[in-house]
Length: 114
Image (cartoon, helix red, strand yellow):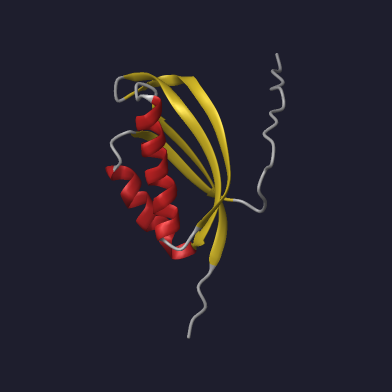
């Protein structure tokens, strides 16, 4: 029997900023429940709050950002992405494989040469 491979992932999710707090919570819970339903586990959630988008997405200029660390069987990632494309309140998402969970988020200043 083949052993299922499980990976640690970092997911960035941008939800519509026009949602009420309750609707936004339900929309985010749908994402977290999708991870659990695929045999995964949410390890850490960083709620980054409402921010201006770099460019309009679906006519929206702001979004509510979440950075989520989770484990899930590797073969479930494609299934999650298919679900994300059907999620009407999810403006953008990105998933990357990572080595460790970041307990705090720290950003280094960008050095501009010139």
